[in-house]
Picture 1 (tube, helix red, strand yellow):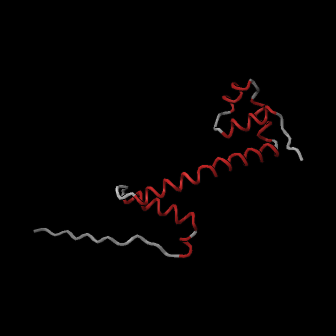
Picture 2 (cartoon, one colour):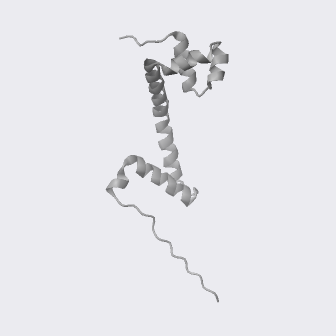
Length: 113
């Protein structure tokens, strides 16, 4: 089954995925805002838009994992940043549901001499 859509509509979808505004797309492609709105409302083209967004996100996952890995392993990274990165990893891996991870208590003693 062939997906519906014209070359112009496919270009509109691609530019929407890139983050361009309706006005920027209209100016770039020489089309009306109504054409863009009609394209966005079409169920087949909306599905294409979502597929392309998912592809972009999927492409970023390995880079995000690398960055989290570097933040967690780097001793120069602030502890609060490391904890936030660790929490993200655990939240995404669903391990938090299986184990109860809590930050160790830090006790501070202040003495006046």
